[in-house]
Length: 169
Image 1 (cartoon, rainbow, N blue to C red):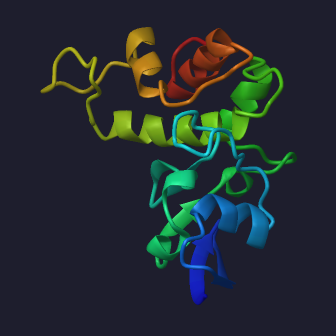
Image 2 (image 1 turned 90 degrees about the horizontal axis):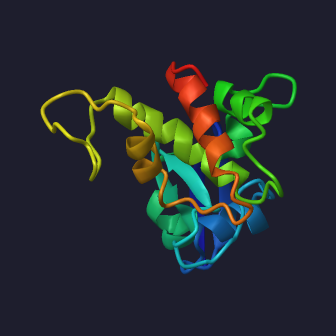
């Protein structure tokens, strides 16, 4: 066991954890932040996506002890039902979910992905590596490919992200 200090959604938390505890399990089981979902537990579906220092990460693939001193943001830290983050509001508006299980990971991934695009970070399908990435449907789908929606709400998810990115949506 180890005392682990985590900065989650702007709040400091100190918990005693087995050093093998994943960040996902620490969030859900110890901090009771159940918005982050356990999907495959192998880093393949993206349901557990959170943001660490503004970058998206599969929380099932990182240990809680490895994230001391880092800024962790979960779906609960983005907005509330009364004051939603623009991405949350766009998902609701465009019905970017069906069962909703993957939605928290999709939203966290989309928020971080748009920050990557704004910073000029290319993807595998970016046509011109020297120019600012253009968020085409192919670019968006490539960047979100680590998040699986088993209900197949992809076209609505694309519409929601496009709206927040400044497209027509």
